[in-house]
Structures are given as structure tokens and as C-alpha cells.
Length: 135
Image (tube, rainbow, N blue to C red; front, side):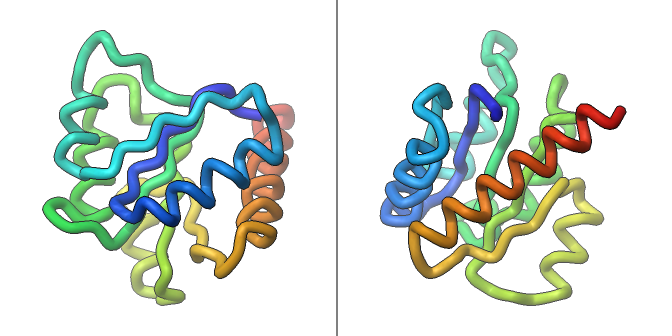
């Protein structure tokens, strides 16, 4: 289970549900929510800021969209290997493909309720942990 997670998402309701789902999996996870894509890049660019164990990035945001954010984040020192999960409400194969090409580790369709989100996060974290242990 990751200990530090960042969520970049302009939707406060989605962020609230994400926090609840994460807390139901583990009380030991520190979640930082950044609701503005430009602020996210500024924060992550700070040389004193420690990269997270996992980063979740909404694809549809004002200012910088998920694709633009993803490219900028991957170019930052320390972020080349951080797992980045793109979140989207659109089930679009083209978005998935572009997100992967730009450096997304995973793509998750935003589920309609907290129960499904909790299950998706649990499966994601366990899958990643299994992958790490196999290396």
C-alpha cells in the first residue's frame, strides 16, 4: 500500500469520494489533493517537494488538461518512475492510448460510486505491489 498519494483533480466531489475510498483501504495513507493543474505543476516542481508513491491525475481539467500535465510531470526530476494513474469519466480508447503514450502507468474510468472506486483502488494497489515484488 502506498504511503503518499497525490490526487490532481478540479472536481471537489470526486476528490472527496477518492479520499473516502482511500481511507477505507488504509488509514496509513497520506493524501494530498491539488485542485488546480497549474498549481500542481508548481508544487511538484519545487525541489524541496518529495515525489509521492502514487499520483492520480484527472484527464479533463481547465487550464492544463491531463495530457499536458502528464507530459510536464514526467519531465520533472524524480517523476520518471512514479506510477501515474489517469482518471477519466470518458471510456474512450483514444484517451487511454494517448495517456499511455504520454507516460501514464494506468488508466481508470471514474466509477459512479464509492464502492466501485474502493474496489478499483484496492485492485490497482495490489497489482502494483505484486509487480514490484516480482522484480
